[in-house]
Amino acid sequence: MNDVTKPVQSGQDVLIPELISFQAGKHPEAIAMVSGAKTVTYGELVRRSRQFANYLRGMGVGPEKLVAVAVKRSPEMVIAALGTLEAGGAYLPTDPSMPAERTLTLLRDANVAVLVTDPTTRELAASLPSVRHVDVEKDAGAVAGSSSDAVEPGITSDSLAYVIYTSGSTGQPKGVELTHGGLANLVRWHLRAFQVTSADRASHLAALGFDAAVWELWPYLAAGASVYLAEDSVRNNPEALRDWLVREKITVSFLATPLAERMMQFSWPRPSDLRLLLTGADTLHRRPGAGLPFLLVNNYGPTECTVVATSGTVMPSSTEPISIGQAIDGMQAYVLNETMQRVPAGTAGELYVGGAGLARGYRNLPEMTAQKFVANPFVAGERLYRTGDMVRALPSGGLEFLGRLDSQIKIRGYRIEPNEIIRALDACPDIEASAVIAAEDEAGDRRLVAYVVLKNGTSPTASELRSVLRGPLPDYMIPAAFVRLETLPVTSNGKVDVAALPAAQRSNMLEEERYVAPETMVEQRLAAIIAPLLRVERVGVHDNFFFMGGHSLLGTQLISRISESFGVELSLLSLFEHPTLAEMSSEIEKLILAKVGAESERYASSGARTGDAA
Image 1 (spheres, rainbow, N blue to C red):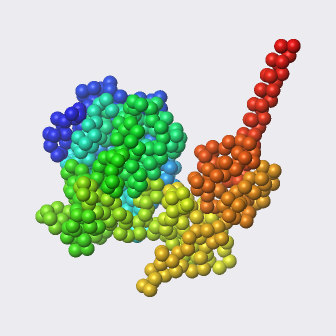
Image 2: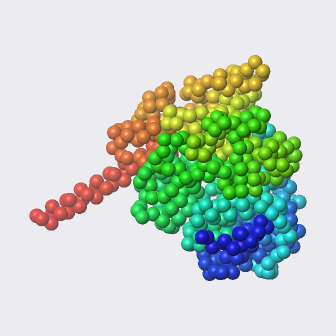
Image 3: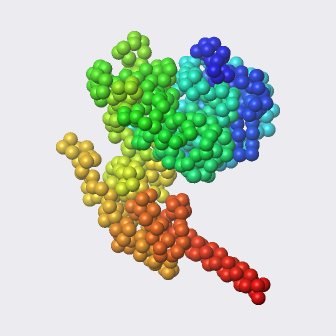
């Protein structure tokens, strides 16, 4: 039984700040957060969040007021979010790594009342002069001078708790409004389903603008557990992440599906502190091996359903397709046909989700809200969310995910609407028209491919287009390849004929960089290795191995040929970090020098021993 049974069961209106305060009252010296060498106790967390809440109250924050938290992964980020909830407001998490132009678009659309920044995001405030501003570093003294008394928030389970922006089908991102009731339902289910206690250590790894980051915080803090905030250098490196999870003795962790699949291939110590690996956000393609020391739980849930709508443990041995589980506590999942009637078990249909976790709708988009949130034909007065996902019920009762009904795609766990990328591409001065799809390379990895019709007289490189796109788009929405077309193929009704788009090949792709010929002996020999491997005529010093069509399988072959030709071992990680011809050549030269140096030392040492013997 978890540590928060009593307050969770005391009523639907028990809210997250109350649950955390309950834990702080019981164990004020218990560790709430760990960030590197920094620790924050529950007593300190509640005291500082209440000070922040009172400071925000002085700025007019209260029920239905939205506070943007543009702070890097840190205790200050959590304190700002919790302080906002303590004040009765709602928070909008943004990722500091996101391009400033895109963040400003979200903040303006959301009409935030207050912007919270740190040194990495401070410049945002200058672009929003009419918005009240708190800097967690510059204003730390003023915040600490505020009262630490509890604030009466004046909110209920129907009040707005947070807003998450997702990629929009109209080409514009849309804000999803989530309530305290939905968040409390998520926490209540999570604690029961995974038996979380104060002894647990949970990781915080998801991108801060991704709703999984919400899930990684509140259930554990409500249970009195410890949340470990990972550095970006750890969370972006699979091997380092595995070592970090082991070293910090993490017991429960969430990883987006592609990363979780990678983790399942590693060796793990036995016994293992990690007991649960939660995954989701993309299609799970493989089951865990029988030797893994932890359980794998597959989860599904659009942002519009407060992170998780269905969940299920994935067993190592089963003849069934991998499922996304069944509806969680307080939620309902229906598989319906075009007329919103139930389909027979085993028949494909659209997934509709209802229950306590349902969002209010989309911020400032009443028409889209009405289209996606519809009346529940089975329960009077209730609503359902049309997910647009195709599923079918399995004999075990779980649901198998079959794909999207519309053009929405997922890359590395992110929901992406191609129209948003197309909108940014079409704004480029060199592009007449464009289309975007997700395609698989020879290794089975999905990547974004952009098809562009260039304006007369223009010849941009792929690198130049990416540079332009990095203003309005985050990195995960930047295409990996750009295919040049004379015109976009269309169907009889005038829509782009996706099925007629050609595969991306070196012959039809834009050049990555203006060609600069290899100069050094290492560059020339390496170019001679890469060119036939990728089936290209030439490789310039600035050409990127992966953007030219390379992938992990070809990368392994390249490493083997480098070893044969140069006598040194280049790691796959080094290849990913140094993918251009010039960068690879530099790494090879370093390895050669290190090898020569080591051999010289061995020779000198051997000579010294021979002399001594003489």
